[in-house]
Length: 121
Length: 110
Image (cartoon, rainbow over all chains, first blue to last red; front, side, top):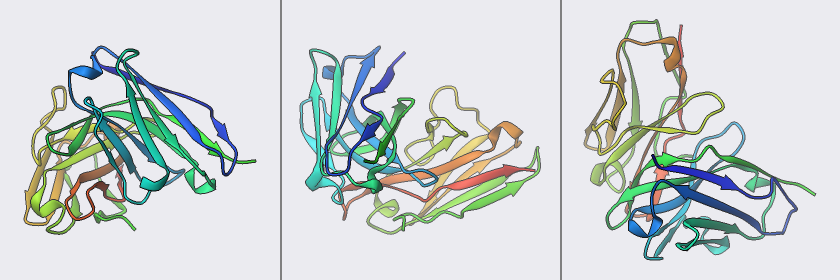
């Protein structure tokens, strides 16, 4: 059974970089699939942040692209998110997920439980 | 504003049927597969429907999906109180080169 678990600081100061890691168990990242991040601000809907293919190629939300970096560490079977220059608008629950797709991601079939990140001084 | 449009809320009695619509355009729903997600209160979203109308293993056949032109519909029959949740549609947008979602629909089982 594939499981994903997010980890990282729950509080980040404005203008700093948000860093999260997603540990994958039950499946080897290097075997395939896209691996990505989705966030949900308090009381709002879902927003796709971006994803990385097991080979390392990436897709980013155009609205966040200038601030986002997603990387993969196949030796640790985990992938990471970095979001720079954060503001209060980046406060959200951050989910990592496995995404199915071919030339681009189609849908998320496995989700982590999510981790809450608050941006505040 | 979400790229895909869903009604904010729907409601129905236990045992009844409800449908949730998701409207888009030719750059997203019109030319890409649609997926649906259920988010129970305080939990992560869960995949309900993928590729317009396919159910992952473990999803009961009370849940169904369909697509026509630039709109998609999620149907739920035999409503149960445990179905109370937020439901989201999603798809790839070829113009934006991004995964996009609807704003979500809150289902209330009266």
